[in-house]
Image (cartoon, rainbow, N blue to C red; front, side, top):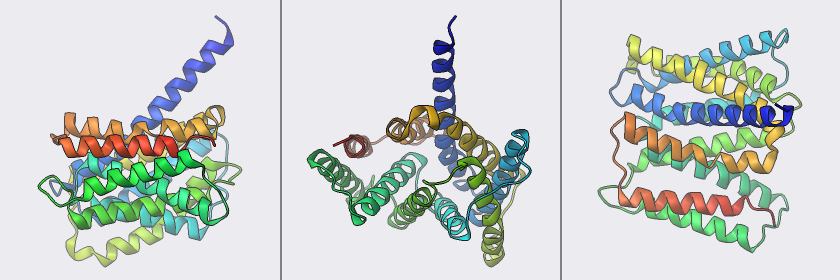
Length: 282
C-alpha cells in the first residue's frame, strides 16, 4: 500500500472525528441544561476549565512546555461565545441552536471581510441572501419558531465565535494559541459563576456532561481539527464545516428526541445552501 491512500484515509478520519466533536458540543450542552442537571454558568466554567486542562495535556504530549500565544481579547471572545452558548441552550433545541450558531459565525466573518475591502461576487451575494432568507423563515412567529431570547443568545454566541476565529487566523500555532486562550478564559468564567451563584445547580451527571464537552468535544475536537486543517486547506476546511449543524440536527433527533419540523428542514436547507455559495471562490 502506498503512502498516499493512507494519508487520505487519515485525513478523512481526522476531519470526520473533529466534526462529530463539534456537533457533540451542542448535544452535550442541551442534554445537561434542558433537564437542569447543571446551570449555564457552572456548565460554562467546567467546560472551559476542562478544555484548558485537556489542551495543556495535548501540548505536553507534543513536548510543548506550556501554551504560547493568545491574548486577553481573544479569551474574552471565547468566554462570550461559551457563556451565550450555554445560556441559549436552556431555551432552544440543539438542532436549531447549531444552525443559528453556524449561520451567525459565517455572517460575522463575511461582514468583517466586506467591511475591510473584500468584494464578493454575485454568487456570494446570492448565497448571503439565501442564508438570510433561511434565518428569516426560522424566526417567523409560529409554534415551531425558536424561543426569541434563546435564538438571540445563540446568534450572539456565533458572532463572538466569528470574532474569535478572525482574531486567530494569523496564529502560527493554532492549537497552542487556543490552549492559551482557554486558560485565559478561566478567570472570566469563574467570575461568571460567582455572579450567578444564587442559581447554581451541579449534579454529577451535569458536571460529567460539561467535562465531556470541554475535554473531549472542545479540547479533543480542536486538536483533531488543527491536525487536519493544514492538509484540507482553508476553502475545503470552511466547506466541510457545513456538516456540523446537519450532524447536530441528526443527533438531536436521534438522542434528544427533538422533532425535525418542515419549517426547520426548509430553513436548514436554505441556510446551508446559502453558506455553501458564499464559500465559493469568485
